[in-house]
Length: 363
Image (tube, rainbow, N blue to C red; front, side, top):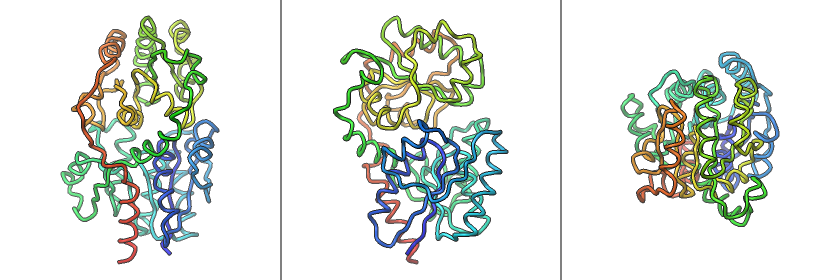
């Protein structure tokens, strides 16, 4: 029996783990235990994902949330190491680029436990982003690097990662989008937003530190989205960090023009994504989900890891430097379509990951 300890802690990781954990449960010879760091801990950012997506309850919960990046990562590292010393799994699986990711990878590698990194090889080439540092460190102490795209594979090769450690499998978020998208086909988005059925709307999300921690950028984004409401309504589910920053930002007039929502569970978010006329976001995962559902996207950042969507015309990269830049980009992208491309595999990334784990464990 191959014992896998999966380290998760944040919303995007829950989505990715749901796809892979479902395959692990169906595979004889594999046993998975989940360790939840607590990075996203409230009901709307954590519990609802486990309930809706059928993710097994965590065997270990560290309850580490809040604090600086160093404080949070250090506490996670200490807690994960203790669990690993007690359980000694055959492999530790980590996802993405959060503090939970790098803490899990570091703790395992220092104890000489093999690390499998799902969604390896992404690069923004902006080392001011904490996510960029997390993903680089994780990749270079991982033993199996599961890449979602050829771009990610090429990034690792350029950094000297041995070829035999890299397995290009596709994107597990595409697996999740295919599976769960079919489950919400009949759900009514108007109950979530209050908009009349059939009314076109923009779905927006803002949570990235470079935007929420910069008052000028945050004001530009909110006021730019408010300007869009002259044409069509904008729904904005508020990440807890964003809500906290907005409370002291003096943006009341602009916020009143937006339809503010509480953080959404995955299935409700999929409903809104599938029905939106356009998605404006600074989230890496939401960029891809827009593409999976055939919806044009405007990314409110200076760079993106998912460059293939920009190249194909599904995504427009717009640094939020002025209100007009944001509102104009949204208006120009409405109704647009990109090229017919399939950069994220065939929706069977999870099966390829499990096959690789079984093969490695049997050596």
